[in-house]
Amino acid sequence: MDKQTLKEKREAALKQNKIAAEARQQHREKYPHEYMPAFRPASKMKEGIESMPTYYHTGEMAQLLKTYKTAKGFGAPDIPAEKLAAMALIEGRQDFGYNDWNRNNKRAVSLYENLINGGATLQAAGFSAAILDKYETAQRLKIPFETAWNGTGKSIWGKTGKDYAGNIREAEKVLQHPKNQPLYNFIKQRASVDEEMPAVAAAPNAVEMPQEYTEGNWRLI
Image (cartoon, rainbow, N blue to C red; front, side):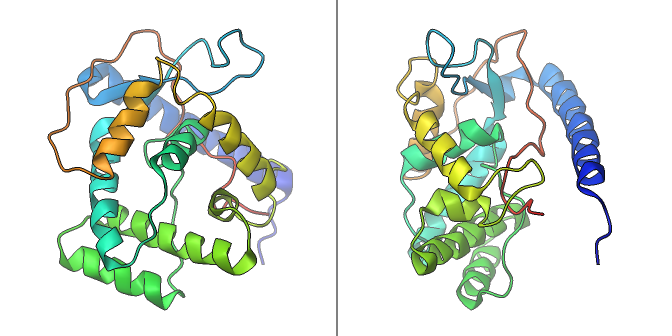
């Protein structure tokens, strides 16, 4: 049994986030052309978005989306690009908040193995397997996909899947903002069309979100 207190879990998560954030910052400074800026929702701001951008590694994101496109041919559900882009904004991560996948789901296991056999990376195959599993969970429990993606319990930060779903809806409202259209178009194109990834220059003075940042996805008490 995990005897860690809630305070200890939060402190450990914050420490992990700080280490990951520093690593991402160093990598972006070295390879700025590999990152794309986007602006997370902020209802109290005049434009409805944060004043400083969050950066997403386009190579990793493109790899996940390319494999996910292939996964649709093996039975993975077609999650709208709007939903995926909103997830990316809320999570602040190019992996859409993916952490792990359910190996007890036989259909997810079969999908994962087919993708691996086709040359997919472990992370990309796992991402698609997680989408399939969480979609089936959402269908079974009759809840929104984004609620299932976050988890049906409560995170160490006191957030529920319902809270997360509300955040996703807020993020969907700012996808068409001119500053966010590049990220949305990038996700939409890679989830449906194979093409060369453009080199996107990153702007200076960005606020970095840690690689492990998330309010939900399987981080439950």
